[in-house]
Structure formats: structure tokens, C-alpha cells
Amino acid sequence: MPKNLKQTYDYIAEGFYVTVKDHNWSDKYLKRFVESLSKNAKILDLGGGPGVDTKKLLKYSTNITAVDLSPEMIKFVKKIAPKAKAMTMDFYKLKFKPNTFDGIFAKACLLHVPKKRLLRVLKSLNNILRTNGKILVLIKAGRGERVVTDNHHLLKTDRFFSFHSQKEFAQYLEKANFTILDTEKVKNPKGHRNWLYYLAQKK
Image 1 (cartoon, rainbow, N blue to C red):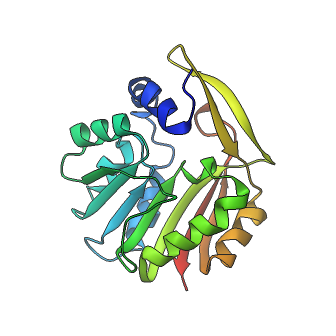
Image 2 (cartoon, helix red, strand yellow):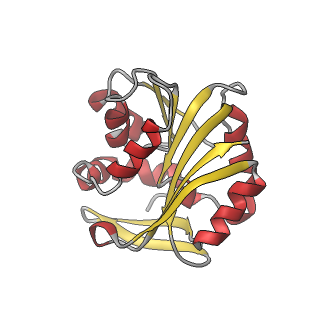
């Protein structure tokens, strides 16, 4: 059994890609996000896993950077979205200068951040956005935080998740100096639990 999140995603990378490669439930939110940005905006795909959404973002901009904690996931990004700049990076230790990006696409990654560390992470994301830069967030709705055991193509994993109410996460965004432009509860996509969508702008 993998001992941490990096090892877990390395371990399940191929099965995870097979699971998510045909998912399209979040495409309308991706479209809202890119349409809120200028043409060919500089976009960071944060914790983007195997690059399924990275490839979709490239349809709207040629200036895409994809980062993920897992080197095995980044290998998939380089295969399916070779025009993106892809690199292994921990979002607790982002190596970007302030005011680097016009937009950050943060789907299904911030849900792995403990609540006690979330505000610091959101502030660091705000810092690397340019003036009036946008962030899209998709996280799981719920309460509390805990380790969840599940299976990806017969590979058993334990992963930490934090769950939020719509109001709770909105307060974190506001404290991190974001203005919320749009938010929505996404009901049970693809048989999963409810998700929360946010589009926010750097103040």
C-alpha cells in the first residue's frame, strides 16, 4: 500500500487515466472558465492528474502549464497533451513568480488539502495570478475531512479528502483575497457524490 499521496497517484496512474479519460461532466465549467479569460491566456492546470483537462484547455489556449505531484501522472500529460508545459510540482511549494498566470484551473486537487493548510494554499495561488486573474475550483461537497479507502481498477488506495459546504469554501476564497463570480452545486456527476464549483477573481 502506498504511504503518501504522491506514491498513491504514481501507483494508480494508469487505472486513474482509464477511469477519467472519458469524463465530460465538468466540461461546461471549463468552458465558462476559459471564456472569462482573454484570448490565449496563460493558464495553470493545477494538480491536473493525467492531463485529460490539460488537453481540453489547449483547445482554447496554447499557453498551458500543467503541474502534478505525481511523476507518473505527468508522463501521461506529456503523452496526451504534448504541447503543454508539464512538470512535477507540489502545490505546497509552487515555484512560480508572482503575477505569472491569467487563470488557474483547480479541478479535484484542493480537496486533498487539510483545512488547516487551505488558506495558505489559496493565498499562494492568489499570489501567482495576475491582476484580475481567475481561478476555477471544483471540490467535493460534504462535511469534515478523513481518509477514504477505494479501488481504481482493483488497486486499493487510501487517500485523504477534505469536504466543504458551499458557504464554507466560499469563506476561504474570500479570506484569500478572491471575489466569487459564480458558484454552483454540481449534483451527483457520474454517480459520484455532489461537487462544488467556484469561479473567482483576484481582488
